Each structure stands twice: as C-alpha cells, then as structure tokens.
Image 1: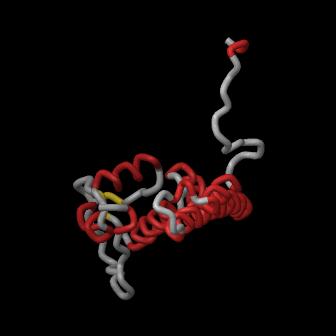
Image 2 (image 1 turned 135 degrees about the vertical axis):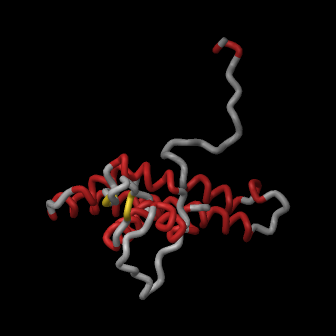
Length: 159
C-alpha cells in the first residue's frame, strides 16, 4: 500500500480497548513490520500484555497518525523521532521551522516542474523542445551562466 493510501480512524472510532499489532496495522493500512521498526527506532512504545504481546492504546493510535502525516509532509523517521521525542517546546518549534522551510523548497520545486510541464503541454509545436517559449522556460531555471546554445567545437589546437 502506498503512503498516500494509509487510512486514519474515522471520527468516533476511538475504541479505548488495547489493540494487537495486527489490528493496528490493519486499521492504518500498514504492514506489521513497519510498526515493529518504528518501535525499534523509539517512535512507538506499546504496552505489553502478560504474554509479552504488544497492546496499542488510543495514544498509540494518535502517535501512528502523527507519524504518517509527518511522513506525508516529507519528514524522515529520524526527524519525526526528534520531533516527538523532545518535550522542549523551543526545540520542537526550531525543528518544525526547519522542516517547514524544507517543505516550502520542495513545493516551489514541484511548482516550477509543473509550470514547465504545462508549458510543454501548451506548445503547439510537434516537438515542444524546439519551442522558443519552452526553451526560455528551461533557460530561466538553469544555473546562471549555463548556455543552451549549440555545442561548441573545440579547435584542433586544443587537442
């Protein structure tokens, strides 16, 4: 299942009884090994029953939902661990500010890519790569000093 297909519990579905790892995984559309991995990383700390089986409580469900949303926002598991693992509000805000800026950068890059694709789609030429407007759009996003002109021939004296 893709990360964008994870399910979150519907309103009113908070059952106060502890859940097994399989039930929790099914509820969120996850594999049980993902929950075990998150536990190993310190992202989850489920209670255990007398037989040693994991028992997930409502707070664990909330934590899983937070982890999934943070992953969808592009945070790494290490960043999520840092974020949920600190009680220091100042440190949390600093981490969130860094992640927000990184997300803004990814959004800007995605918007620029979309604009380029839309430019290509809007070109009436058979080969959009030869469209002057498309070429200008590409050139506007290149590093300064990058030349899109035809390749230059080296003189024989350069050999």
